[in-house]
Amino acid sequence: MYGASFGGALFVSGNFGIVPDLRATRCYHQVDLSGLKVKLPRTFGWPPKLSRVAEDPEDGARLRRLKEIAETNKDHQAALRFSADENRAKRWIETSWFGSVLDMAFSFFSDYGQSILRPVLWLLAIFVDGTSIYLALATGTLANWRAGLEQAALLSASNSLPFLPQSRDLREDALTALYGTDPSLCIDILMIAQGVLSFIFLFLIGLGLRNRFRL
Image 1 (cartoon, rainbow, N blue to C red):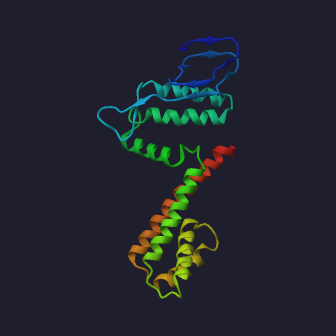
Image 2: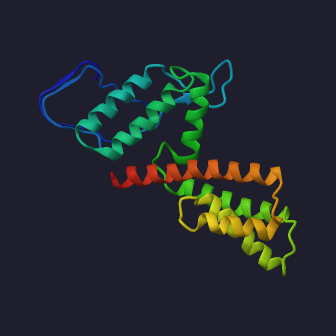
Image 3: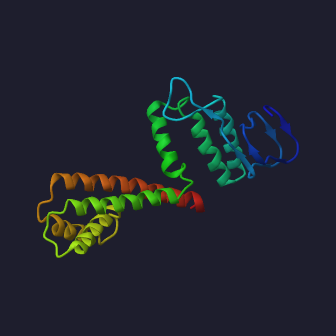
């Protein structure tokens, strides 16, 4: 369909194993791509990469055209799908090595902002792991194991949700209960790492909500 002209409305739907080529097309009426699902053909290239590579280097440009048409029609969900596949198609071909690694992470952790569940689960995993580590490293004298678990959970939660007004006071009280007045450098590093990772996943959750409800 490359370079074709369509005088009437065009409806493209179905599950495609290749990327339809609508580049350089002229459409005088609406082009409906809401029912179009594309499975990007990818293979393990040479030299080996960290993920599969698009079989056809032109697929990135084809998907970019599909995304443009979906955006013109205000079909946000279709535009997100085509944008995600466009990024996958450009990975290792048009995108640099470092950019491709970041692109892989973006895809894995949030499906390019299309998933809310994935970053939520990762944020919960960080909270649970943080609680376990803080409890294992506790040096303070606690009444019982349950009291230590509560303080470790409060410390982990306050690091995962630092924007809450109560977080600072809860964090300071939990630190004192678990480690006394002088937490070790290891605890400081763990808290910083948890804060950074939590911020990333909170951002991805917000991005997913924005894309889901088009805020």
